[in-house]
Every structure is written in structure tokens, then in C-alpha cells.
Length: 253
Image 1 (tube, rainbow, N blue to C red):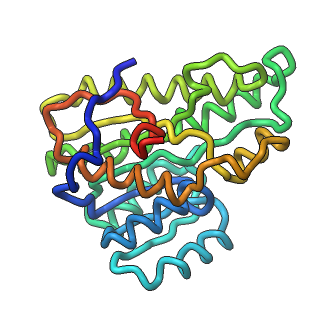
Image 2: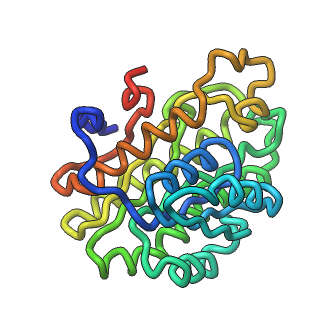
């Protein structure tokens, strides 16, 4: 897989994305990213399924210089309506972040014990939903000749971890989709990139690895800061091809 050689910490970003659609925005990395962008003046549509969590996010973002719109939706089934709502709220989209994902059944079973319908549901949320939402928002990005599509990935996309079959296979599929989007969109002003944020202290990580020492895991807030700084630069790097980027390298960890 292709890795960018660009170090976003070499210089200050020259532009900040102003209109962001972010899925899986109510918890963990998604919540931290939403707050980061609002604190830097962006206008964010935060998408999640949990109404209560979205309300708490809105309250936390209320004193930022940017704006936050919350949309309660399931990305696996509401892509067309979600895209229309996002465009209605923002007028256009500069950055689309596919952060929403599911592990599937937990404890995570081996593939031999994984019900095919559960595998299909993981792909619906982690692959098909992002593909549909990208497809729905892409025309507006192409018209403005500017845009960035981001997939939050995992090392499970490239390593064969036992019991991580559904999640790992879905993340590998999303990585490949975004890699092909980036190849097909060359010269349009629209980019696509996958970012592996590394292991973080989130509820999803606790669900997947309940016995892990959470004290050694990265804080979502720190990872979100590094990712936002990277993406602010990627928007301007129109001559660079992107594939997978490791967020641990972004922050120097």
C-alpha cells in the first residue's frame, strides 16, 4: 500500500476545511474530531445513531467558533437522505469522514463461527454505507473542484488477527475503495485517503479487547488533533497521491 511521505508537522496548514460531514461523531475519535473542527472554526454535520450522545456533543461544542449540526442517522441505511440533509445544512462539503463502524458480534467470533448475516451487517455499515454516502456527496465536491474523502481504518485491515475477520475484512475493503477513488479522481480536485489512528482508549476498543491496559492507549483527543492538522494540509497537496496514512507517524509516536 502507498504511504505519503509528507510530514504535516513540517509547516502550519495553509487552509482549514470549513464544511465537514463526520459519521460516528458522538463517541470516541468521532466526538474528538467534531470538537477539534468546531474549535478551529469549521462547520460540522455530526452524524450518529444516539440522540442523547449527540445532544451531549452539541452542548460541548456550543462555545466554539465554528458550528455543529447534529443528524441522527444510521449510515448503513440512510445515505441518500443523509447526503441531502448535509448539503441543505452546509451548502457544500469540503471533507467527508467515514468514522462510523461496527465490530459485529462481541465477543468477536472466529470466522467459522460467524453467522453470514452478521458479516453482511458489518459490511453494510463499514463498507457499503461509506460507499453510498461518498457516491451521494461526490457530485457536489466535483462541482466545486475541491473535496476530501477520509476513511478511518485500522491495522486489522492489513494484519490477519484471529477473531477480527469481519471487522478486518471490512476495513481492508474500505481502504481499497478509497485507494481506487483517489486514483479515479486524479485531476478533479477531490482526494481520498485512509487513516489508521492506532489503538485508542475508546468504548469500541474496550468491547474488542476488554482485558487491555487502557492506561497505555492513546487519547482520542490527541489523535484527533493530529488528524485534523494532517487533513488541513492534504486539502492543499493537490499533486500528491494518497493511500494509507498511520496517525501514529503523524504525531511522532
